[in-house]
Image 1: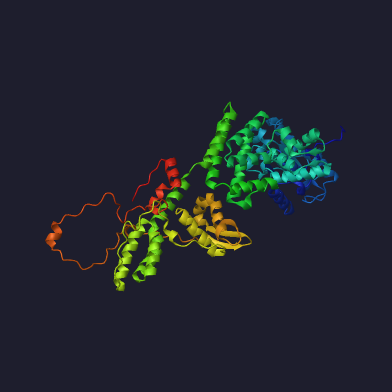
Image 2: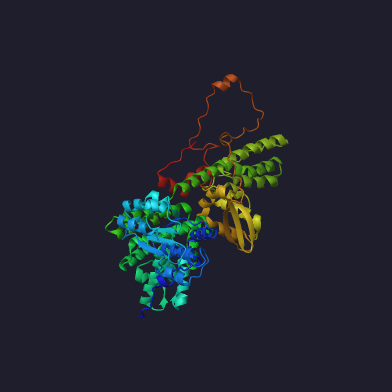
Length: 634
């Protein structure tokens, strides 16, 4: 190896303010201070390792002592700047706080501040890891730091500002250097690879940047090590093999297995990585970070993907669309609990396996939101049953009252399709209409002529099915009616949806942000809704459901008042009968009700899809069993 070889961390060290990456807030402040001649007597740079504290301090020293300075835009190739950059300048004294932390060294420093600079404008003291100074050394520095000579400037750097005396910090201008974003580090590594003629893949660059945890120097050192191992071509697999990192694609694959509730696949992935000697704690941390990215993509798609390769970002967005926010939060909570247990456990793999299984099971469990949505939707369907059958009942009454034989037949068929509670209402309105119209009252049908079917049809089954080849809002009305006819529990959820558009093969529905709860409750049935829309459509569109603040809340079906819902059927019009004396009426005993027959206006409908029998719905039963609950009749 040539003696002139320099590691990447030194060879590509920032030389000017423009070269400093990821610290724009610091660079801007220093530039403005120099331009406005507002230079403080002491600066404190705080930040994690490898974020550019020493490099920024040297650049500031160059700007202060460069020929014609202070100026922010200096020539880095000037001999004075070169000396400062290499640490050889007599006017810029770099002191290691870890090895010069005693009061004697600080007293010697105080004695030297009186000397004038050799060639520059300022005598600059740079103390690295200043938090290592003893309290006595700090106290010895206080007076000099507060009122130094005009030609003296202090620059301090530390990774642990909590150990510095507040009296020292109060005499400095503090700058907090942040961890450098992974995307910024990856771009710089690719730039270095281009300069060095290396074949560094984008995925490998992102993997290195992620492993560096915000430190540019660490990333450059890792790249040096990879060149020694791989030669001129570096792939993501090489990074994982050398440093034990987990590729973003592999973590995304594990996340997909969890969301697909694939127990065997997730456990096989874990076993394979454990056998390969991977750090399971890091693997779990990466998985939690992955689900964090999925959560961000779910709740704020615009903020997702700033530091991820394109293919990984596509996978994250696909996973975000397949899971509800509440379940995703539950998965993250369970994995975080597992991470806490693994830190102190001897058998980390066992706890990881248990955590994965719990997370997968949580995706299939009914949560509180599901139960509230199911019960609310079922109650709304039950309360709205009278409203649903009001139109066909009125039509049947009008037809019977007209006296036309053909109309009576049609209305009788429509009335027989309604549910049991509707029959009483139809009978009452039929009698009333016939009486007011002057015609003979139609006798009620005999029990043997209109037997109650074993499975009553839903209330809106009397309407003819919507024709196919529909488009736009008419298509949505037909599809929604068919869905509610099959599953009355859908009525409230579907009523909250607004039709948006139907064009270019896409059928768009929308929910307001206030009613997004109904959207989340219905999300598991998207395929079923799309299939119903396709069945009635003229172009087989793809379903798209949006949630936006720009969409106004939709009016929901009004629930029938309790006293109206329980109001008994209207009495049949009186006919001329033999008068009965009050004495006879009081003395005659009331006939006992037939226990074999049900009341005309019972509280429950006979059909399983009717509102009164909603508690027999499989989803309601599943929710009741999961939460050990029961429905209390009002």
